[in-house]
Length: 209
Picture 1 (cartoon, rainbow, N blue to C red):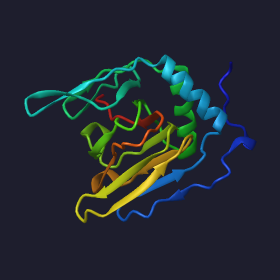
Picture 2: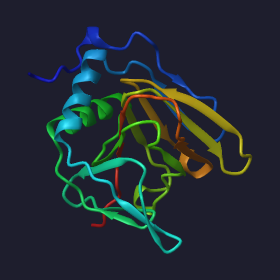
Picture 3: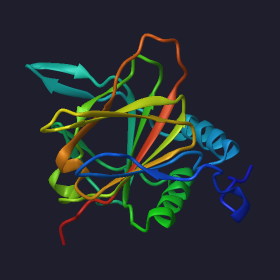
Picture 4: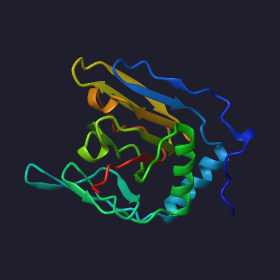
């Protein structure tokens, strides 16, 4: 089956809006993909990506990351976060198609993507900022949600003020400007019986010449 892509009549009914976050620029696009598109992309990604559960070294112990992940990008896009070094797997047809849609939407180029698979409510993402040097001082990060809606928490680094935005199936969240400098973000665990979720965070690594 051919992947369904955008045509002029398939654009989301709901309008995008800017989140009320001082010292940040975060734009949310609900229903950015149609339900048909989002369902098919999710199914393809679950089946095709080389998912793995990496571990981080903390307090002298190896701690499994509470989710599965898969790092993809251009051949030279090696990425390190929290002491974990990732070498890129090649772009798949689905990841490249969504990348091109993100680039057209936000006017930014992306050379890599981190795919995270939250299998249930016990999978999570700790509070953090995407502020690694190779992302530059003001990165644009496009985050696509496929599957179960989960609350996405922002926390200001100085004031500790919090804002929660539920990321829905087929939505796009774009963080840019000084967002990573001023805010942490993450997804908490929940004891509620919920379905799985795939999140794709597209980014542009600054590579050495």
